[in-house]
Figure 1 (cartoon, rainbow, N blue to C red):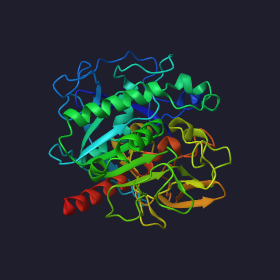
Figure 2: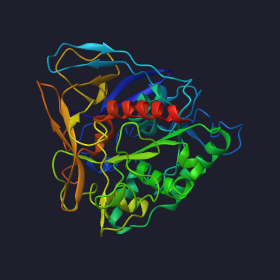
Figure 3: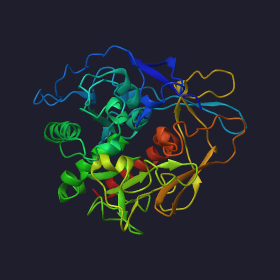
Length: 398
């Protein structure tokens, strides 16, 4: 699978350039879909002000009604099954949804400082398009910019500084409080994060939502991919969260979907899937005894193995000719997934079913990363379906 980047301008998504793995491995630490290296920052569409009447200085990467909102990018996809007979699948956004999604993006900033500024740049735009724009069919997406720990800071060695970053978290917390005070209006919420974004949401949920019965009641689901949520060994609740359990049924709400994807058992020094190390340190989770990293299979929440419904941006995937003419591509029947636990590792084991000449993902950054760069995209169709089902269940009781 070839990685690439996209640009979102004037309501369209277009291919900009290929992002070759050679020579940029160090720049991809905890990056899910970042691009735009060397590009000039673009101005925030909201000019650095909140959507809540200018009540704060929140800069919104995505917010409902925002011009050129990357979280409402076009969703048309080319469907390439094992037979090779292509079809086109149309997508849509749902600006009238009664549900909100609150998204925190992974590490994408290539700024030279330890923490990123709040200027919306191509890297954040590309991450939002790749990871969360397809959720706009089931919710209105809110995504604050935050002072995330940059790729530069992470390459200096996360293990050398295991303390969570206060600057990054405080800016996420500020955006959350602004949204809650001025924009939520009691609406039910889906939380979505990946990697550093999941680490920030783990801290946010632990301090602001998990101990608050009213906010727990408005939580439809928290999707925390690649963040090392932990539970007591063999249990569905405890450790990271005291009240929010792992999801165990498709109709369950107020629960957590968490996983890290690998093609086989992660090594003992893995950054993901093993408690108390790697990405765990970004949320202050250092406990190793009596706990395991959580795994909920987005394709089969109740457990077992099932087929994934992946979605990749066409600029990042290279199937056999003819060239793709849609912004997205999906390969039904290509991947299967099941949660596995061996030794200290727990992971979403992703295998190939019927390749039939279609491109497959690789451990681009090595076995300690697994399929981290595409955690979300491998399961994106399943996750959107999960949210849709959980919203239906939530509506039936609220």
